[in-house]
Image 1 (cartoon, rainbow, N blue to C red):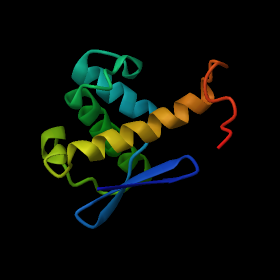
Image 2 (tube, one colour):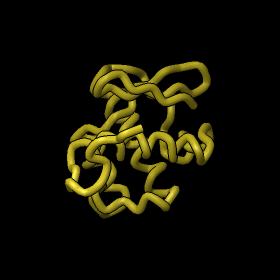
Image 3 (tube, one colour):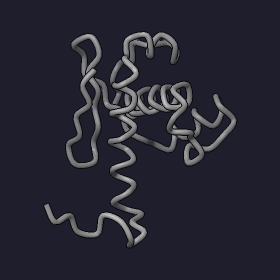
Length: 112
């Protein structure tokens, strides 16, 4: 899988097909219905939660953009991924969030 970020748009490639895969309100709702918790409470060390949220984001973004989504559930979807793929995608989202929620103490100005 390859994760590509263009400004605010994130896509993933699985089996030579590219799918939009970014957070939407629908993805957050899907995740809450599947896992019974909010996405801001996802344990970043929990592959089940991360994989489910990744599937929810891909399914909802594809629906939003009218792109056929070829995976009926998160298990079928995750069978095509490696753990490091999920981690890389999660880091791309966390990177976006950390830019928006800077506490002021860390990463103010990289000097390298």
